[in-house]
Length: 242
Image 1 (cartoon, rainbow, N blue to C red):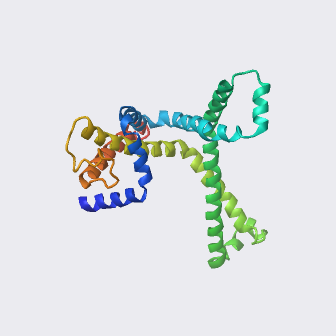
Image 2 (cartoon, rainbow, N blue to C red):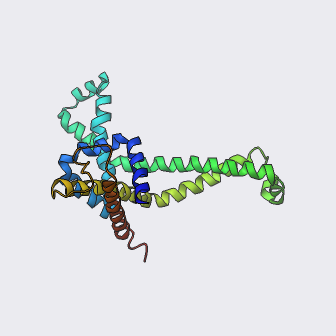
Image 3 (cartoon, helix red, strand yellow):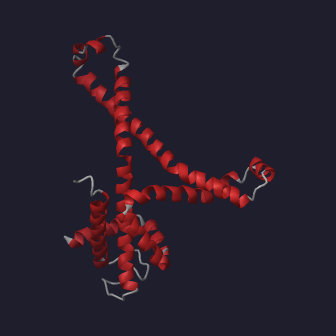
């Protein structure tokens, strides 16, 4: 069973080798990444908004600012403002960082509405096809043209799904943060055991930055990941389980 689990994980990793290469690229900074990932796992509810801010802040510097700087009117505007360009970019990036959480939440709301709309449309189609008499039993729907019924279903269910997702948004973000951060923490935990404590775990392929990680190392990473996930859920959802 262990070999089956390890081979399954190994196949997933090989299909997404770029993610593993990114982790390896930060191996020299494990003393920074490991504590941050552990803190993110244990206090996901508190740090999730900070993570969004950081993502927005960095995205501003990496993607948005380089893009808008290409336009002439941007350069002209910067010349007219008697403030250092670095300060303007910093203020702009801070604003983007603050707005990122709200923008992402709004995007999820819209996605939820669209998803609910599609589900509502399909449900109404099934009812109209197999149980059309239902609409004749409801007084309000008797007066409605059946062409509009799928759209009514789409809007109502779309709104319901959107509201449900909005209410659960923080919990969804917390769960995603725990899962991602615990996986990163587990990877670097095993790396530290091999690199700093010189432990022999499997074939020590992590030290070689090998994409084909040995089965023993994969199982060890999985065990650490499960432990961190359990700790993350128990701490972040402690009040809600009482």
